[in-house]
Image 1 (cartoon, rainbow, N blue to C red):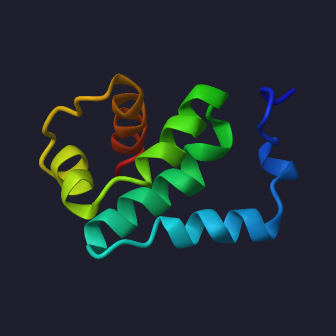
Image 2 (cartoon, rainbow, N blue to C red; image 1 turned 135 degrees about the vertical axis):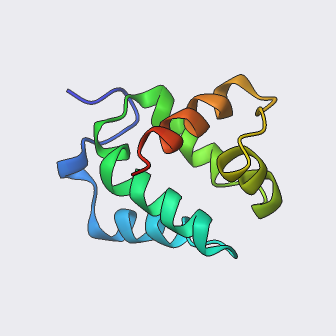
Length: 92
């Protein structure tokens, strides 16, 4: 059973999935690839905390995302750091 406030992957509508995919599109190809890969591989299996952190992560600017995801600089927000770690774990 999914956590309160979130639908299971099967219950996520195509419109919701497309909206998330669109939010993963950034100004840098590297970020596009990393975020889209996580959305496909990690997000469907994530718990509520990780999903909410990922949604918050998508609100960050491209320079912040690049620093955290590509250059592996520490993320100062512990909740966002959870999402950063999850996105990085889906690499490869």
